[in-house]
Image 1: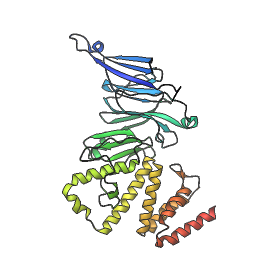
Image 2: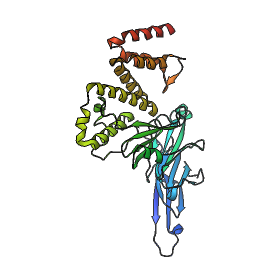
Image 3: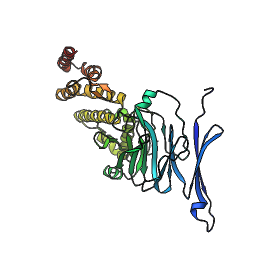
Image 4: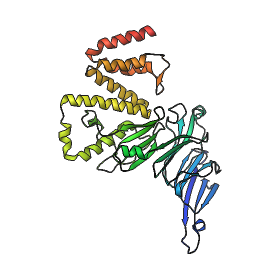
Length: 373
């Protein structure tokens, strides 16, 4: 845009000189230079080490040095915090703007930095000040030993410490493929078996949101081919790349199908009744996954599909549990920022209204809603 200020760009250079008798602290170093256009804004130099990863987000820059040292800079190059020693080399590094009112540290999307040694950091340029006031910048780092930490950069405070290694081992994985902040801002782990887990601040634990165990489900067929997994080589999950729930589960389903091989056809030829039961559990799982990932559109979509399936299967008891959870209590209560009343009127009841056996149930709750308005 004409007249617009150029973005700030950070460049990292690692220098190694093998000189006999020369100590490493003076023969090896790294330089970090921030420029805007042709103008150098600031620079810094670390002796005896090199930058492994870097990530930039608005007014902050974080660099991961050798031996698990993390250094955080301000927009103008001030070392904001002392070098933090995380106890092992850093494998994943990312920062992101996160709404404060979403799960303690998780929330909506914004500009984010991916972990790479040639990161660029753009200065904040206006935008919705109210939105910024309701959000915070978080930084996430994960070491090679599976130690995960998150900090609120603006509050200078740690908001989460967790250990990925025992969780990955419990999931039967040999390797962690990716750790990132989800589209909603929650820590998201993808394992080599394509199982995916997200950290729930509310439950204070890791929750599985993708696996390949639903191969009997009729709905799993619609997921095949959507994901990035193909023949054992999957691309990284990118923020903003669509419905995270569907993509993660498509990858997991494809991986399981590939591993099963020739047995898959016999497994998938289960009875109709078994497929319908598996479909219900699958939709239930996906609805819960969307809720944990805080994806509003995905949650509404999966909730509607799950309720439609329950209606078709004449599961009135389960439907009443869902409906009662939405209509009981005060109407100012919400799910992912959506009023429960709106979910009931716009998602649940329309999803089951076309099933003749559910007409009495729909009429009953429409009358209740009319009386309450």
